[in-house]
Image (cartoon, rainbow, N blue to C red; front, top):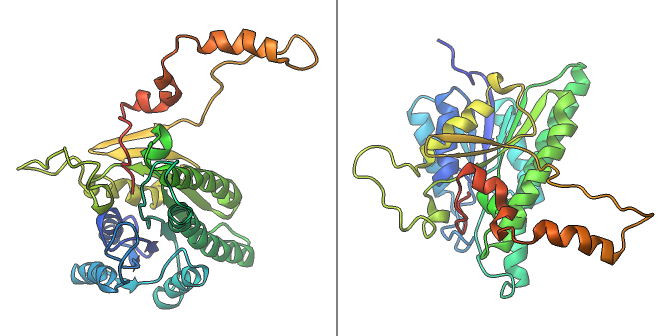
Amino acid sequence: MSLPLDGLVAIVTGAGRGLGRAEALELARLGAAVVVNDYGQPGRDGSGEASAGPAEQVAAEIREAGGRALAHTGDVADTQQAGELVELALDELGGLDILVNNAGILRDRMVFSMTEGEWDSVIRVHLKGHFNTTHFASAHWRRRSKETGMPVYGRIVNTSSEAFLAGSAGQPNYAAAKGGIVGLTTSTALALAKYGVTANAICPRARTRMTEDVFAGFQEPEDGLDPLAPEHVAPLVGYLAAPAAARINGQLLVVHGGMVAIVERPHVQAKFDSKQETFTYDELDAVLTPHYAGRPAEETFAAAEVLGLKREPGGGA
């Protein structure tokens, strides 16, 4: 019996632990050969010496279960190393069909206390890291499509966060990076659709090294699967990587604890037209001030309210 991802090759970044590990194992279970990327630094803030251990361990798990896997320990936020990651998949596994971007770090601080380094490092790993691998993968798929004159098979699954959807007061760098990833995803989806490639983003909620303080008050159940286990997220990634998801492109999906929610794109809540050539201050005051008067501040986060999400400080990968 064939599996949904038989014959396909996947890259999963940040796959040595947590969500990335669960996603890599799921893609392998569904039949894909997997390049397991992880820089291997022990600190969730990107501190400590890089190590091949986490990536090698997950790759070994996949091989022991009968799958094909390689480890890559490069830094995806480094342009050259991201290119080498894509080349490894092409050279050693014979192709690239699926890219799952998950690598990230946290350096939390209120916006008035955050340093330039704390801002730059989080933007670099999350947003630039997503761009780098997407750049090299998309260039490969475009080249193949032009050579054959036909669409290719390509799937990109990016990792955003509810910190972007609902706000996160102590994570301006992280929230900005995750919002940027959604913009990168929709732009990529439009650019690559004609080549047969889809790009989607997920907002996962899971108990991982990066969210250990966020969910410290939510105890793991004594029996059964933890509602916050990364294993709740991995099946959606496997599905989005599969042929069955060919019509899903440029979408944002929230996933956790046996729930998947599709997030609509922003829409116009209200519209006001000037009664003259252009608005004046007084006219704007006359139409906008009454519109917002008495409205709870939380209506700014209407999407989060509809999804039943709490504005936790974090909650993403």
